[in-house]
Length: 150
Image (cartoon, rainbow, N blue to C red; front, side, top):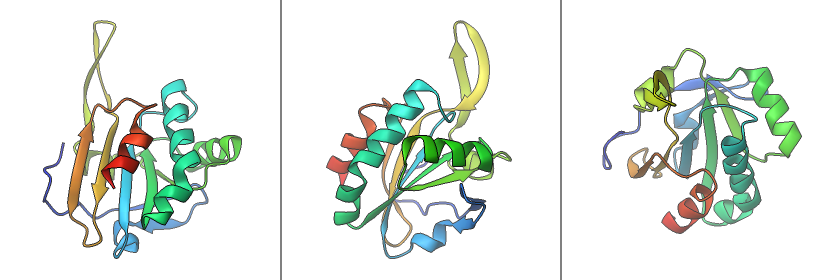
């Protein structure tokens, strides 16, 4: 996990509509950047819907929400439409941002070691500095936790 107080690594990735989005697009706003393992899985759906339900509250506090996984653009589009998600989902199949933010790690699933995305959420301030970092977050609790962090 990246250190609090460090500059958030720049990235440019396609969103669920195929538009290229960069970290620098969010300068001047607070950004909740969350990394999750996979679209349409129970935990990831609970987390995304939690952020979706609270999205107006995040916006009131001057914050944007962006989710990143290694799923493709088409998968993100289906996920967004199925759950009416009001925020941006970025596709990172090459692990550009996932590795830059140190969330691609060894995981232990039923005794079998695999590499994967560890559910992590960063709060990045208006100047692009990491203000808070939450590793191994609980999917259902994370959106409320982030609202509180603001």
